[in-house]
Image 1 (cartoon, rainbow over the protein chains, first blue to last red):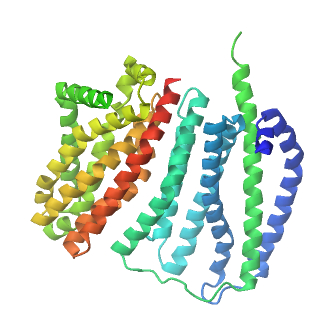
Image 2: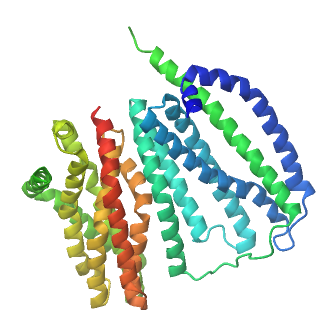
Length: 239
Length: 221
């Protein structure tokens, strides 16, 4: 906890992030280059999915990060409401569009994969639908945090929303599962298949770590920008 | 508790003196449902099949439509400041406001829905079921909508924003509400759906007043 409070000071956070960002960006770029080689060239095509399995190397980590991103928003919201952590608001503001972006990437790559494999860009499958609802929750958070003339009010309203959303996510997920089994008995072939082979699993995990670094990089970068923006706004107040 | 009752009575009196506000919501409910047969076509079996979903969606929209004024009037005329200063919990005040909203919109919607269901060709037991699910489900809509109303208090473009916030959170209620009526038609377990609907309402009852109160406090600062 003491470490978190150490970072609560935006100036201190800033010094740290300035030191970390260049090497983090370099590491992400390097990992991405290797990861794309592993995923697109080196790994073999799947015996059932063919070349389309390569979409999974982006799709699956995006889904993980989209879900982790909302948990991060809720954590930041809690630390804003409980400890009035000044940096948490800025970081939540920075992280929400990044999480929404990963959510969108997950939905889009899923649609591109679904067309050749399932024969449709979109099916009302439980997992697809709950991902779409997660995307809507992100949109609500982004819209609410930017809906006020005083940014602090938007930050705190969005923090409450993130906490309520994180309590509701399991309920939404559960009810969508229920709805799906109720309305349509599995109309799409599911690939039960054997467990993932190492030639696929290694690039997948590699890409997951890479995209996690990208997520952290983007959030840190955008938090820095938010600090600048907030300073600019405060500086404009006439004497 | 007397404060709770007084606040509910006050909101009901306000609604009673301006019956037009409630009438508009109910009219919207009727007009919106009427559009579906016009858009989809008059085949009775198709209409009976989609009736539960259509009526539930329309009820959800109608309930949301009336929510953006739930705290706004109190916010503007200073009543909210007095509620914040009052010696009894703000959570209770939030609950009272939502309860009054439910009496004014949820109850009439549940009473009106069977009439519309009749026009969609629902069976008599499905009509009763529809009313029952709306009775059990609309309190959740009032509570979640109340939270969205409190969060958007004083925001720009609050009406559309309110819907964007509340609708994803209302999805479970919609699923079990419409699912219950459908279960009646297909021989599924109606009681299980209704119990889950009640469980959602209880969860909302136990959690949203705190969140609404927190939102109102930061709006009042």
